[in-house]
Image 1 (cartoon, helix red, strand yellow):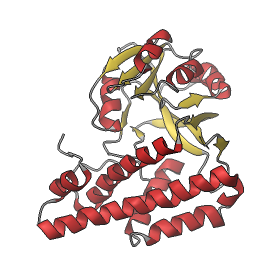
Image 2 (spheres, helix red, strand yellow):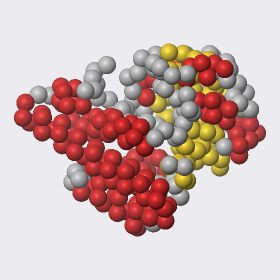
Image 3 (cartoon, rainbow, N blue to C red):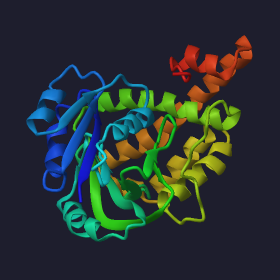
Image 4 (tube, rainbow, N blue to C red):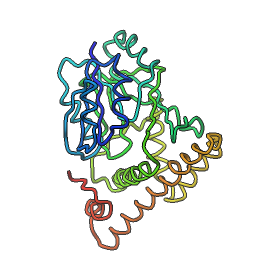
Length: 300
């Protein structure tokens, strides 16, 4: 069995060696696809034995799907890993022992993902652990064609491993807020697409399968997206911080729940409102409004 780990990067010198080290015992090959790093990301990746490819950035989905199209035909399995994530030793051991024993019709494997924020594990709020499909047979999985919150899609049978991937970003809070400002613009593109249908809509939303990611996406698209903008951000924060006891995560956890559970969601709603107001005021189409307000060219 061969396993290729795919990591997308841009200026990840503080993370990339750690990510690669966490899969060093299980990966047959590591492929890093860089989109213009100006730091030592590429050099550090090569020092760890990774193959480094370069491609201009459009969005995560197009970058990742391009990456898996570059893999050799002798690749059996692919593991998607973000540069600021690590595979725990427990998950690495499970992959090493259990993956070769899977039935031939199993195309995808779910694992748990947890997050650390400002150095603290987030344990409350009903957010983590989240079950995500990160392992899939080469040729059987693709990333959803969307601008934000992308998941891997497979058509065949899936299974689960109990081990975890840990998201532990080491950058500053300033970096985090700037990145989530960009995330908010990308999420608005997907919300506008739900409303106006100007792009193909791929989604893991599914209540019947019983998978956590599918259920959460269904609730987000069928329930949350239909609530009044602004109000839904308050409601979501109240659910996480009060009803699901997010306040028990301490000062760092409070920062996470306020910033990611309220500020970010409210920012998405206001950017959505800004684009729709621009459309009404200028009588332009949605693609033009996205370009003029958010600076995103959805026609790329």
